[in-house]
Image (cartoon, rainbow, N blue to C red; front, top):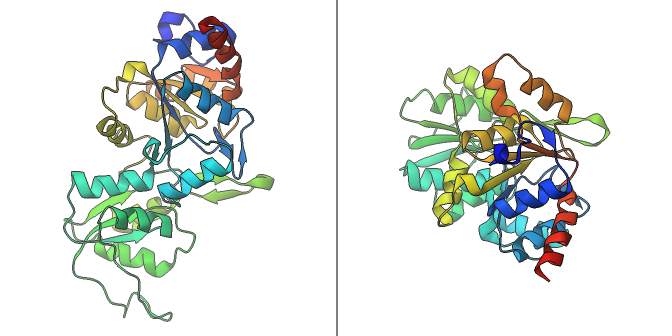
Length: 314
């Protein structure tokens, strides 16, 4: 569809071009951090964009690699930040999709050893996935700690309480080739204020991949599985009618490319247009999958197009 408008390939779009895109697409997928909000502050105009899309009869879903909170907490955050019409079924987090993968795809029969926050455990428990409870003595080491005999999967997410013992136990469980090795996502880091960064789930997964000699199956973006989850819960999802809007080239844009979706980079988050242009001009064809079809400064750039559509309908 991007080619039909004549401006495909990392081009900034405005006014009439955005209006044409809004009219052409039926399904909008948004990343959250850096697109919808920064921490506890909504991106200016984002709430109005979401409500306008819903009012126009568009399908809107949110796809996030943040696995630290259950979906119910996301609904509360959306409401707290002024997104009053977002419902639970519109939210697809890497923790929720990991629970669906374990329950519906591999149909795990046994316990799951989780490296992750309480939010990840809650999503698994709500899906009926048994999680191994940590009950080690504070002074326990890998030499003398107990190892459960029925662990059938190791799932790695963001864990701000990661210990060497957790890493060592996970490595032991993964010695069994029948034990699944899953990661909620492979995000390497997340930006913090003041120029600091927070190591992401991908950095923890990388450590375990080295110690176990195995590669993890990634559930979140840029894996196709998140889109398969959406397609299974919304009828008639046509990739050609979808637009993926995100702020990170290596996850959001690649996710869209992997799923056959048109992609839009918003410049309110991690990646900037210069990086996208470098990928576009690269001799490596694999880098071209990281290039967005469209670029906007912020999703608030949608708002004038909505005003035009409202005037047209009146």
